[in-house]
Image (cartoon, rainbow, N blue to C red; front, top):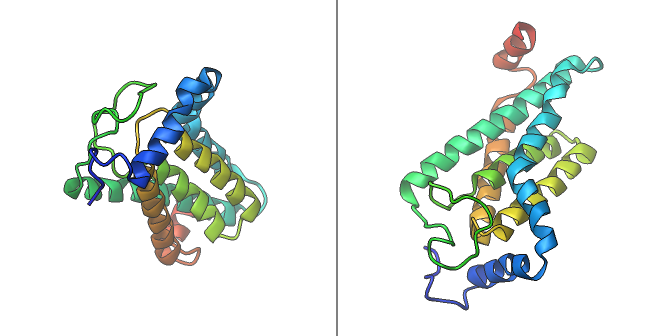
Length: 190
């Protein structure tokens, strides 16, 4: 399914080397990329939470915040299903990247970070919140880039996370509408 680590000319490995190789060329950038990889998802989640207490268009904002949360959780659950079938080693395990952070215990594909940030950004974009969705998408791209930069993911891992995040947001958009019974109960209950 994935290129063999012995195949150094595969686009995935070539891109990994190009991005992760920047760490040795620009050490000053390392601190920034490590911070993005550590705190990027958390900051995106914290940016969504205040919508729950919005004073204008309260029901609409709560629906958006809940949709983003459901897509976030759903995407990560989908990743767990994928991990049952795909046990891809991390690039540093294969000796293909220089790791700048602590090693992860779970398999590499798909990237949970990429799934999480994409689920949030895609939810906003699907709700036609283009300004905030675009900002989340740009922040998400930085998080995805940081995962390859710090050596913990192949580029195809973050691409896989992007796909699962989009899929989760699409499923939530299709089933969790403002008119559905679950939304009405959640908005009133909480």
